[in-house]
Amino acid sequence: MSKVVSLAEAIRDHVPDGASVALGCALEPAVPFSAVHELIRQGKRDLALIGPISDIAFDMLIGAGCVASVTMAWAGNVSAGLGHCYRRAMEQGIPRRVRVFDHSNFTIAQALLAGALGAPYLPTRTLLGSDIPAANGTFKEASSPFDGSPLLLIPAITPDVTILACQRADADGNAHQWGPWGVSQEAALAARTVIVIAEAVVGRAVIASDPNRTIVPALKVGAVVEEPGACHPSPLQGRYARDHEFFHEYHRATRDVPGFERWIAEWVTGVPDRAAYLRKLDGRWAALAAPGEPAAEATF
Amino acid sequence: MEITAGEVMVAQAAREIADGEVVFVGMRLPLIAFVVAKRTHAPNATGLFELGVVRDTPSAELLYTMGDTPNVAGATWCARTIDLMGLLQRGDVDAGFIGGAEIDRHGNLNTTAIGADRQHPTVQLPGGGGGADIASLAKRLIVIMPHDRRRLREHVDFVTSPGYGSGSDWRRSVGLPRGGPSVLITTLGVFRFTGGEAVLESYHAHSSEADCIANTGWPLRVASEVRMTEPPSAEVLAIIREYDPEGFWTRRGES
Image 1 (cartoon, rainbow over the protein chains, first blue to last red):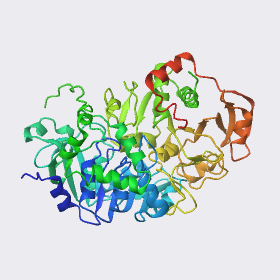
Image 2: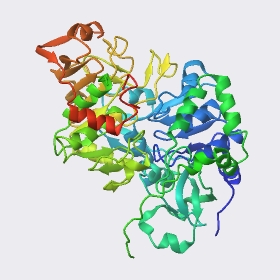
Image 3: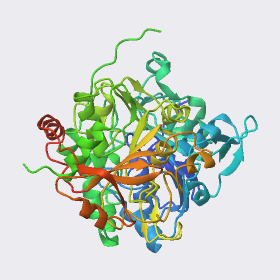
Image 4: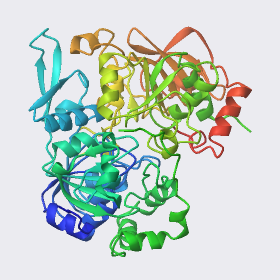
């Protein structure tokens, strides 16, 4: 059964106001920025964002007033520094207060893995002695029933929806992603449903020719969107490189609220969809092409 | 061309990697330190990147983030964050690099927020990322950060990444399995941890023992044999400047 829809339909049908949404789960690469922009265009409110790093994706959503809480290990602008919108929200309540659930990259991975396993929690030794557990407020201290050693118990996270960008998927949602996975697979398997945004929708035979490359199976997927360039300015392995300067321009442009609003008007609300956004990037987009080298053949 | 603090820090950070070690590389200056170490004294070091990349050769191009496409080209393993964090928790990782906004004398680092109330901070920082995990679980921790009195404080506002807590036995008492900071490399000097406390080992050529003391927010202990930090060799400088020709990381004046 084909699940292929437009991005606008996928966001409308699968991300209600108040939803918990995991995205940017490969850390710096493969961030589904086209979906972030569509969430802003549709004026989503009270989202509970989940993701380890997300680069500037969370910063944009926070600045646009879409967010009630963030569960993350890091939120900012990876190569430029601090995220101005995240700072304004936390320091001044502009445009609104946001509740933070601090994690480390390991504990957010464990929380999502627990969700993927259907387990209530996973025990760990990381962050013993850190102030993160108390700030987060959802972890529990315990001692191992086997040897009595101190442990932290990290409760499962089960997103309402995980948004996953990848190189290719079939119409059912079997998704091939390569490059680093970060916490993407755990986030997809832990979620109630998954929106797959593929550079290309391909035939079933392409997926079945290399099933080890499938990051999430169709049975978890609610919608498939074909959207070339969905991750710009973040990179997608074998397709396009990171647009470093775009991140730095965002950093400079969003230092104050009017600057952020101008940036959103230019790059998000001022363009109807990703195709128009890529046309606006023009030669800059073509220059990012990074096809890479073919992998050695594997036969099945 | 004048040698920058960033270049001195990269050269020192590279010296902290021994040949054959497994190292969590991290971001910014440590990315370049790994390249220098691989091309000089540590050709058999392995680099781990927490988003899921393992590689035993430096990337061909300057990295702005660990997720850049050149960091995956030539990698030996593309995996999940949980796989690499598992190696760390098991004790398979020799050393890791992290930075910080604030540090205290026991090497406890804050990268979360400045201010007394976490939910209403004076300054919201980006957060710890995987730094708190590296600080908790690596066999030793190499800290790299800018140096001034607001950053090297008697007490940090929030312990994101645990160092030695309140002293040398603290890590064991809270249940951390190993590790702790071995060295702090700042824009002014190099500090070795002795008995769970940072001790000035060397000041950089552009700095002095007095500068280090004046810019540290606690009464600084100084090693009896304190000296000048060994400057980067011509070979090391050439590697740094070839890899980061515009000085994106090494000439921005901070880590």
